Image (cartoon, rainbow, N blue to C red; front, side, top):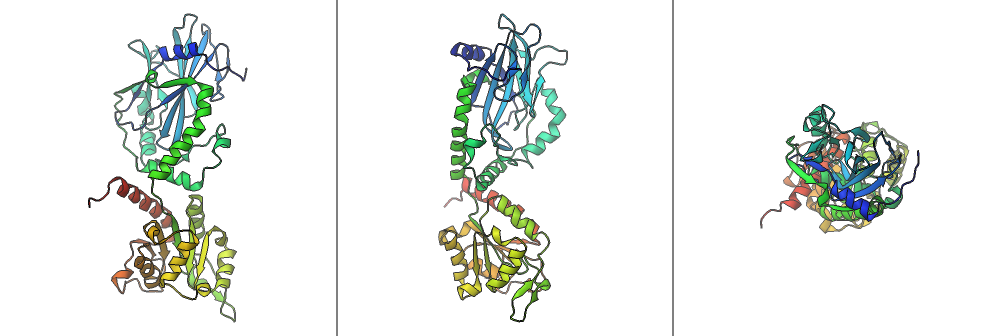
Length: 414
């Protein structure tokens, strides 16, 4: 089957607009399309935008492919879905196909008729996800998955980067994916499966597929820049070591008092790897001796994940001395004004929690160990948040960032 196609002519784009389908969205659909890329095929070929074979059945003279662009899918930044109108020699629609979950399906009513309303091809779009069906009733088949996708799984995929645009989006960082996740999580919704919102594709901008493909990378970057500006994120995560990452009861010392062996708290390594994957900047802020941390954290593969290490032996002071936290901030290019975008995670109420609270840093107490007191001796030692084990931290940080987003969109009157 031929692999190449030619750009649509202006006359073909006019024809595509004249025949453009109507899409029915659910009443509370937050994301509508904004552009359409057109390809017109005169012979069987692979779709230039999907690679899917386009077959010409008997009586089909041409196929119009509509590559429909959305800035947003509820699970990721940008979406392309497709509709194919198959025309006879008189440019009348004789068949319709459309994309759904990566495939191409025939769009027919239960009796086999074309999905027409008032003489116009009319399809139904999955809430948040935009897969097409011929009827609203067909959307009910996957309603449970749709609800989960629009709520619990919102933002799951971050920025969609497929092979077609990968080379143009090499500057996207893990932190960008996280910003997009938080942006979409803040827009999670319960779909209304009433599809009364009618949207004429002809009302948005049409162009050739080639022009749309050239436009897409710049558009993704522009939307991402807006999200970076709008979506607040935590700028750093400060981590203690003893009974926060390392099980102090497992420590073994040499004759000079250096730790030569210690086990991690279950889930600690996985937690650090998860935070790194999400693009968080991590700093070790710990009391102890440098060689001990090199041996233990380095030996377990945690040390390479830190962007900075502030250790009391090197600093000549110990927590809760503000200089420990200030050095971590300066090492990451942060200042006292960034305190409310930094978290400190530790097991010690006086040193970790009190020290963080004193500077306005978000304090997270990990209560895993029973070695030290669980009762604050002073109000300054009361943690902002509490977790029981390292595995709870990624979820809590996500919650904090969602709270930050809500606070920005709904500022307290003052």
